Length: 406
Image (cartoon, rainbow, N blue to C red; front, top):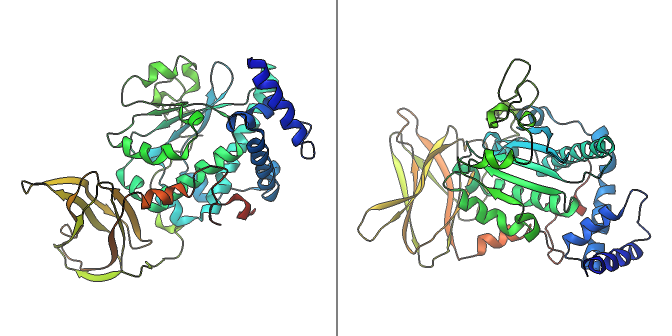
């Protein structure tokens, strides 16, 4: 029965795609696209054709030759391939907390970041090809170890970050189906369930089943069942060190970190129909009361100062008059690009959004802002705009057919 399930769709798929079939497309290749669409030949054919259109449009076959990463990406994109697991699959370590994604989006356009993502994935594909030759067996999957130890809440609430994550997941799922062997999320913070709530709808069921999430404990025992310790930096519990003994292998593995403002693009403005401007005096704060009448409503915000950073926080007033922190007070650099974010309300009631300038002894600040409450699911529908389904139409900023080389 299993052979029939595999054989007949594979044969139909090849027949349907005769006009685009290439010499290097083997049974393994065909099976990846079929599995990605639950063996629906129609959907798998459509998916492959769209992929080849995109692949040709940006010259993906040669991207490792023509693409030159911008300096900011070379210096501040943390992680990379550090070794291979027991089966020969590449192990890609990525320090999510050290990746200043918001800062990166202030430096580069989503298209530039997408090109870099594809460049890295194609380098990984080249590694898998070399491993296949070396081991004399097909290597077509990769392993990710994603460290969240220094990840901050402000990354998650940023709309621009959230939208790019959706874009990146769409690109990966649409163009590299069934190449994920395992993704280990390690050192997940207490608020990671919020991250997963955003990420999970973007993933296929098959991809999501390959994700394992760990807190501070237990993950090292698990990952070292599948790979040797000399394939992972000592910082993550392995034995791999740099030439000078650095446990993070910083001599050859980029470490990321906050991006200096010298890399930022030209200042942008906040454009919202309901935007207001206030002067926030030094050593003072400004509160905005928001009445939330439905559980699941979304509080959205966007604000920018004329100079300097600004603190903000969100809390909910309990029935007894005490305040429950929803987002702890956080200082952000919002004078280059507007700070944007959202919060999903898990209860009705009065919420208080606060701008905080109490820490500033000398500086008044002009703050332009728009803070509002949206009905349940509205914001998550925006996330859904980038979900990787065949039926959904993406806007031009997320549609691969609209992206070009360069």
